[in-house]
Amino acid sequence: MSTRRSKSDSPNGPAAASEAGLPEPALAAQAVATVLQPLARLMIDHGLQLPAMLELLKKALVGEAASAFSLSDKGSSDTRIALLTGVHRKDVRRLREAPAAEMARTPMASVATSVVARWISEPRFLNADQSPRALARTPGRRMPGEPDFTSLAAEVSSDVGARAVLDELARLGVVDVGDDGYVALKANAFVPREGLRESFHFLAHDVSDHLAAAAHNLKPGRKDPPKLEQSAFSQGLSAEQVAQLQLLARQLWSDVLRQFLQMATVAEQRSEAAEGPRYKVRFGVYFNDSVQPVQQTEAPAASKQRKAKRRART
Image (cartoon, rainbow, N blue to C red; front, side, top):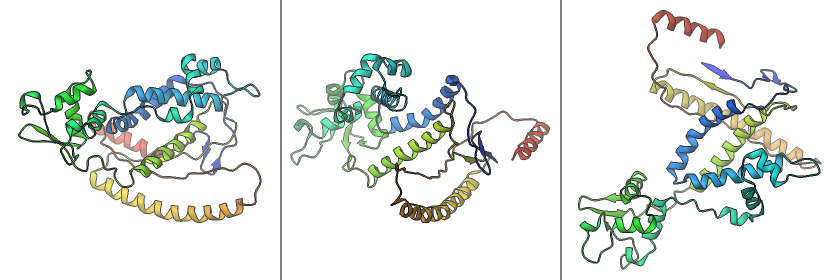
């Protein structure tokens, strides 16, 4: 078992300062590549495609450069932001001038989502009671005068084949493909799951604050103390032992949460009469398990020696 601690963080409290250093783009790229893997999974799961993500990334880079890296008393010019971020100066100007409401309306729907949107709104694809009608998968399977799924998909996009769209909708559990060759939308496919909006809200803020703490600790030339950002990990576990550890983690979090909330309530009361800027805090915990990559079998002596080293470090 091992623990990870910020380089300048000691067991007895944070260090007062860190040594000045230059940016490390290669190391940062390696870290970002790992962070992007679950982000890519989230994108695919929820139909968020690359063009929309590129626009979001440009907005984030421009916004952060303008707010956190502006020169004192001068702000940041479009040229300076373009130099810091690599975003083209025309895009910098467009994003800085775009109203917030307009930026929030950036289309993010995938082809599959657009197909369903037309399916549930176009009269040609609806029954008399306005419910989505079942569609023949291909023109060859439909009755004369009926619409079909292949034609519907082609109306939305000529770049993505109907079969690929159908496979994606089936993967998402949105459609049923019958043995008769007809495709039907599930009745509850587009009813938002209870608590889904709240879950996305907490995903955004929990992960954002976690990354913000890590980015703060890795900032070149940081002078102020590091923020708490630590974890413990164990490997070589069976599924049964993972379940036991997850249960323990939930119990420990329950105890810690109670103590933290009690202190936070007192802190809020004591802060009511205080002057100066106001701060928000977030203190969280997470538990994740995944299958380890299969490694080559080691010689027994080497394996024992390596385990001894691991025990010596912990």
